[in-house]
Structures are given as C-alpha cells and as structure tokens.
Image (cartoon, rainbow, N blue to C red; front, side):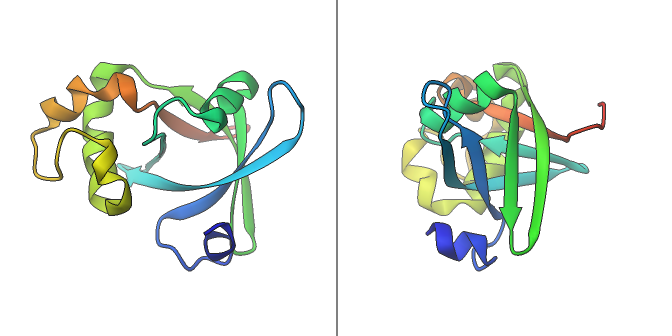
Length: 130
C-alpha cells in the first residue's frame, strides 16, 4: 500500500513519516487526509496507534506524495470539534468505516460522540502560524 500511496495512486492519501519516540528510527505509514475549508486534517482511524504517539511526541510530521514533500506541525483538536472532520473522513476513506460506530450517513453528533477514539490533527505547514 505504501508504494501505491508514494506514487499517488490512492486518492487523498500520503505517506506520513515520523521519527520513533523511543528508537529514533524513521517510520512511514500511509494516511488519508481530509481537506476542508482550506485546511488539512490528519485522522487516526485506528485510534492512538504508534504513529500517533510518535507524531504527538515530535509535534511535526513529513507528508510525501509523488515528488512532493511537505513538513507540518500538528495541532490536535478537541473532541467536540472533531465531529465534522471524522464524518468527512468516513466518506473519503471507506476501508476504515468498520472502525467507527457512526455510519457515513450518521449525524455529526454521532461522530463527535466517538471522537475520543479517533484523534484528529490539523496540519499546519512548518513556518506558517494559524
């Protein structure tokens, strides 16, 4: 999957690179981004997995797709703000729907109710304040 994401064959997907918080090793994982209102969001559909812990510890990540690479600071958003982002995520990443209790047609409130299980980060390009 990482190879397909790297060359841009999977829509809305990027290769996320973090540094291991304990080992210092570089780790890469395919991720799907949500773009909404001119902002970009990184969703952890499987919960607080290793890349989430690594990203939180570093505060920054690298995203690659095709020949483009960008560096981003992460701003984790509050659960009560994550509902609309999670709802959009489920629509564009159908392979992860089984990890959500709310369905693609559920109201935003259902996604907000389970936001504590799916961390959401705003991606801010390094050097740009928001």
